[in-house]
Length: 222
Image 1 (tube, rainbow, N blue to C red):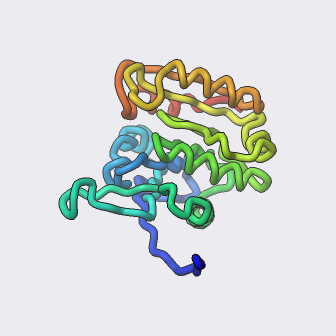
Image 2: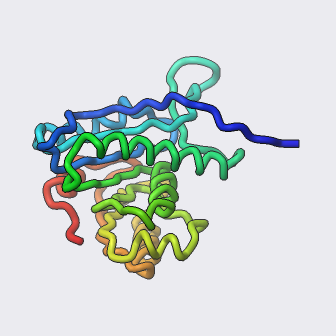
Image 3: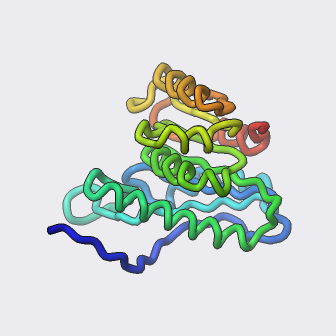
């Protein structure tokens, strides 16, 4: 008989900048499968450098770490697998909500919140935000080279997405999310009322610096 017990976990995250009364933008960025936050956050260093006082970037790391090849060497992290997935989803949501509350307690309520998720992180971010939508929403959601899961309850999806600025991004050589699929996903989100902007670039399954700078310098309007 399978049973569950809740235990305390120590989660880690990486941060660029110091939260303060001067903070105007808080970016919470979720990495993809097999990545570590300490490397993922480096993509966002130019955003912090462009606004070192006002912009703070925080990259939480998935709770499940593993060796990328064999039993040694490089380590990566994952947000979840199909094993015990409902418990994993609950743990993700609890972790991210706790982290965000901790961060927001250190900066003004007026600070603009952007949630950006890449690859596997898009499903994690979407499920988490859909659960929280009755209480709060981010000011901007960026889904990069990933999906908005079809298993999210339609009512919760509507509550999250209706009127929410959403940027959807993919490279023209992305092996997981083609530009065609990107536009199909965008159409689905628009059906829930999302204010979707799509961005394509020449490249594969990666982040693109120019689009990051654009989303930072000119946030999507609500």
